[in-house]
Image (cartoon, rainbow, N blue to C red; front, side, top):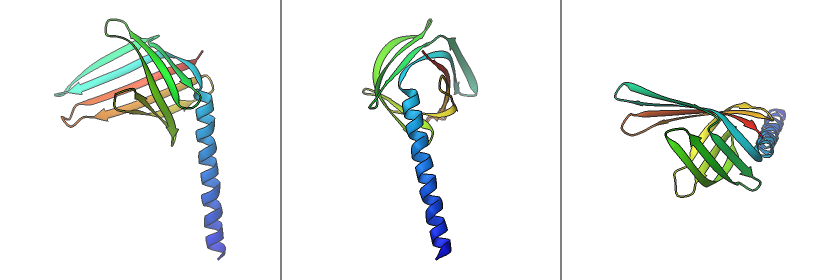
Length: 137
């Protein structure tokens, strides 16, 4: 009986800790974040194509799970879009209206600094990675 009570207590503590981390991260994200550095690579057929940009735009996270982005990468991208977002297991998923969701692992989670990472392997075998370094405005 003591073993079951101990396991139940541990499970409850882990659940509460996990939920509070998600709530803290959710509150921390609300507001506007500058994309200080964008580092992407696309690997296809054994060749890797890097893409690096600084001051690449902003993400604005609104309470309740909506937001908007303005991405500006000189010479390649200049777009604005709305999205929905959610935090789960120290990851953030952003879904642009009409697009597939993208989930980032949050590597750095500070009040005014975030680093996110995503790696996607496509059915063709091509691999795309993306690392974003952000600071809160």
